[in-house]
Image (cartoon, rainbow, N blue to C red; front, top):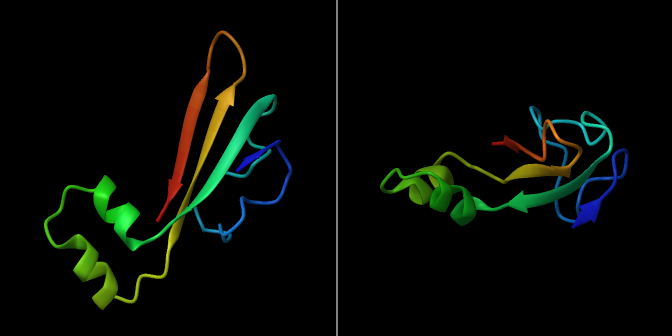
Length: 81
């Protein structure tokens, strides 16, 4: 889901500690998405991670991507797991 700084998180994304605030990088477009267990496991090359996350009671994570800005920065990512 695309949003502007200050908007609510993307649908399905909950507030996650460590996730950069939408207003942290002014003038950049923000996309926030929820991540389920399988998505986190696919991004992390640890065999059996999905099963471990299930056993530990993992409920979800989120990541926020900032794009645009200017000549000095055009993309930033803020994962929270």
